[in-house]
Image 1: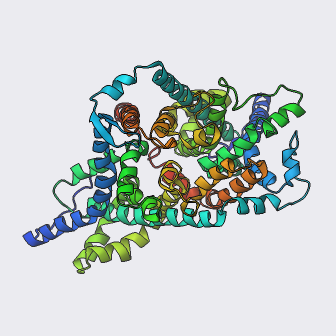
Image 2 (image 1 turned 180 degrees about the horizontal axis):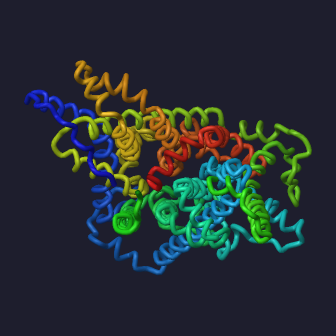
Length: 307
Length: 285
């Protein structure tokens, strides 16, 4: 982060003016602070409270259970949820970042129409989670699905995109990678744009072109952006919800139930609500996201040099 | 781009030509799966229903048919949902620009005790995923009787530290002498903010505004749990209803997706500059 603004040479000021400035500052901060207090700080406290309590069938806390909800998590069912979350995260972050990197590196070799092509790769970014998921519902449909139609025309076997427990999670991953690729391309392209032109020229004079230029010059210099992209994609993957809700509803047989979807199921999916259990899982999610963010800040402080 | 400008002047080895051709070929191969869903959302929306329901489905429409679009508009009140989404995203964007600009002003131009601590607190709010607060927020909004209302949709999102952070960066670039001169002339803080600072910070305001608008336009989890009636649902939730309605007619789904994506598609094509600034602010300095 950045250092606070350098103090301007301040003229000696009257006490009342200083007080006025302080009052004004708090006045300016008040709207933001009010929203944070009501909808962020208080909810965190209440989530902790709920996570320590059992509840009736509509979610009203009715008994203290201590760490009971957390102890329940040591079950094979919750282990499956965590494994699914991990697989989903890996299955979206790795191909997403690798794909975006491949696209921007290949774009470097394009002389004419580079901007236009980059814009084309960014187009899916316009799709919301819901609109992308709805399009892929049509693609994956088991009866007259578009993708199976294409496979059929090519004489290939049909794929049980969303109907098999083995395949469904990867199908949701494909949709997610498609949606997020444009963002990765924009981030990495901005990074390439910030590499000083002399660096590339020097490398070229030394005879580095194509793959060697990419491997020894461009990719190392993209370090900060790649790292940022990995962290942001991980946090996004951990929070993914809409595509699972629309494409699979967590199924078949729970094979696409990630942590966030599990929270939704316990709290909101049915006429009964288990806010206690859901809150305990929400705290696990919070912890995982905080660790990711801490790693991000820690590494950026230590290793990555912007300048 | 800078690297390629002088390329033609150098001696080009055959290997390079091959490499360049290979790069183009690979790009073309990658572009097909990236663009196909975009194309098909619109192509499918304009197909005749029977062209989509047959197997294998038609890939190119034989003519322009509006049956799917009319069907989608009849199946769910898409126009109403459009208006809901627009209002929700518009109110959230305007509110966040206001709350962020005020807070950023306090951090940059006003000196007060605890400024650094409060700023750290602002930044730390960015680490909390919304999903960790949705249950209590749902309970709060319901207790206030605001479930299934506009107020309930927007209230938790009227302030967000990301905008404050970005505008603070931008305000810090503002020439200090101009500020001092305005203050010397006896200009009040609010007037300075409104008549001088904000007009001169338009690019940053646009970057924040576009970013906030797209993210709130795309919101899914919160509108899903806080709205109940079809009249209050946003477009994103409406798309899900198109699927869970009696028929999962592919034509209706594609027409709904194509209609819903038009505003953001326009923003991505016309305002990419601002989107890049807003979205990559954390990545590139």
